[in-house]
Length: 632
Image (cartoon, one colour):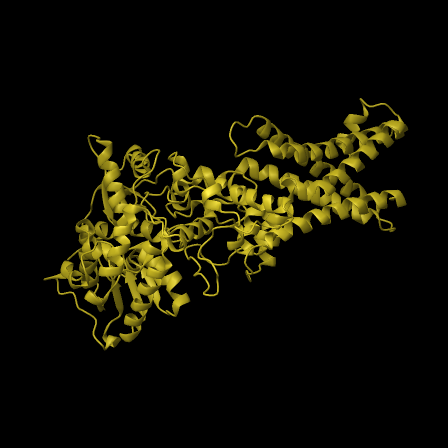
């Protein structure tokens, strides 16, 4: 039982911890007010299963051991303070369980300590050594105290404490030593509790809160800025939302975002880990100032995060997908871009012509709406009329399908498939504008909103209910972002639509292709919308195709390098992302690589051409693969 002095020390430690967390929370509250979603059930499942943490098996198991090594003994200590008799077999079983968990925790702590001592990169920061060392001291002194106790009572082997019994063979039967070890164990525990908000271990609270408040649904949508905001985007930490600052507080700099980020792997200026840590450093500066920011604020871009960093992002969402505590560096980068573009008017020079084309011609290629249906000439492609009841689905062609010579082929093959399946479809033709995704990803919300609102009006005027599109960027924008502007349409990607046509035997794939094929998952189809299987179901249905997966596939697929507006930006320092993916495809040994995105088709063809290999794999849109085997 605890003495009154022990309770006093515990109270002091808890007060210090509470004061520290209060200061940290005051910094988080500098962010804009927000009402994030809550997921208590998800938090419990997450803590018990460590699902995302376990994506890295070694670190995941070590973290699981340490987590339960803290939780279970804490519960046992709390139970021990109540004066009730526990049956001896249950008490011994509980003792054995606690000891086994303690041994697992010891193994986990040694793994983390050795990994940090041997770290050569900032992704395993040395600042984490102190809390790990304190936890290690708590575990070791606990085992030594138990071993000394067993040495004193000399009862022989104890199945309820096997590790303690082994230690008792080497430890003296000294009551003084046992008391010293117990007090050292107790004081180390107090130090850990008091230091919690001031060390890396505060992620126990911040990370749990972030999981509790995590965004529900798919990561493909970007929230629209609220009209009442005084500033556009984020120029200081005050411009971020409370939830965004909580995410920075929860970041442990584990580096999983960095090792999966294509820009980081291509040695470009961007590191999602660094972006989060830079925001955190600004928060810590505010904390040192007592949360009193200077009048001019604390600019993020100019002082901490460079323009080269934010323009290196491809919006591939690998950082969002792989973060173990659901942090989203991408929305911070988008807010930083918004501040640059809409707040300061500093859009990169090479992207200005594309934005101007969107404003003047309503497409990213500057061709004009009068030419938007030219690709469909002499192909019996129906235009939608005022009476859309005769149409099953609207085919949203997109800028690339309408204007890009290479991707016009995919649009034409899609028409061929629809006609073979006797699907009643139509296109908007010259009434279709760009969906606005490129402007949105570059940070120009005003252009995006103008295009989106006009498209929504057109679609509603024609009574459109279902939309089919080839482009994952159009798909994600129409499905995930238009609803916030009043849209209510059912949106499908071509891969989903064709997979269902095959399943229902609406089309017949008869001609064997006799090719080895691999699949490149587009970021905005896969990570953004969790659509992976339709591509593979289609390929499996094509006779003669031999499917060979890339090493990085599905949620771990490597980006083509064209998203996030990068199709219109000069490539920065480092390697070419599309060539890195092309090398992986070439090493796979496939004859064809199938994808389902106009950006991916363009970037992969350019990347493969740059390799200058003797037998380069051919890049095919999934629509072209199906059309090659179609019985018409």
